[in-house]
Amino acid sequence: MIRKTRHEIFIHAILILLVIVLAFPVFFALVTSTLSFQESYEYPPKLIPGNQFANNLKEAWERVNIGRLFFNSTFISVVVAVVKTILALLAAFAYTHFKFRGQGLLFSLCMITQMLPLPVRIIPTYQLMATFNWINSYYALMVPFFASTTGLLLFRQFYMTVPADLPDAAR
Image 1 (cartoon, helix red, strand yellow):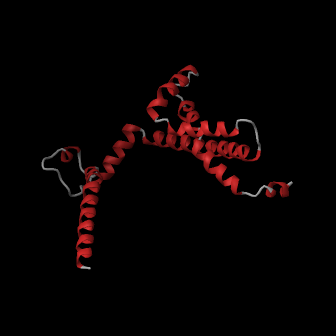
Image 2 (cartoon, one colour):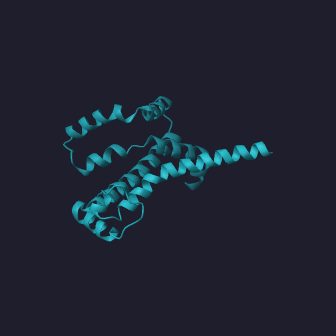
Image 3 (tube, one colour):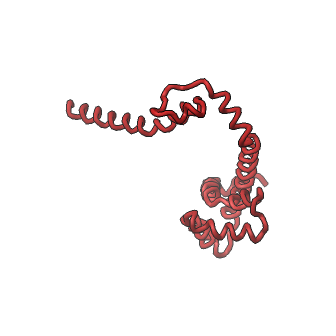
């Protein structure tokens, strides 16, 4: 019993130390965001928050145009999420309710694409976007993410749990 308690204390001490080590950079970044430019480069570094947070936030907002960046991120995320969901729903419904030759092979090919790492796909994707003249456009940021094999798999598995008589009963 005592041995188990010592082991648990040791494990918890290691975990607490790990949390401190991993959380320190975040804490340091937050503290630095409250300091003036000169204070942030002093040695030894300050670990006590300063009073320049509002000024730093205002300056960052004006310099980088965070409003535009936030709009771009939100717009692209919403459009991709909506289109990806609709396409995955429709494709999964078709896979589940319509039988055709090579259905299993086509589904397997879709699933195999999940195994391709990003470095393998990024150059052909860039070349395709350049062919369509979509470089530096919203299309290049959205269209490659519309197809979702994960969404297809999840919705297909859901549709497979729906009894076959249910769509017939709705007719």
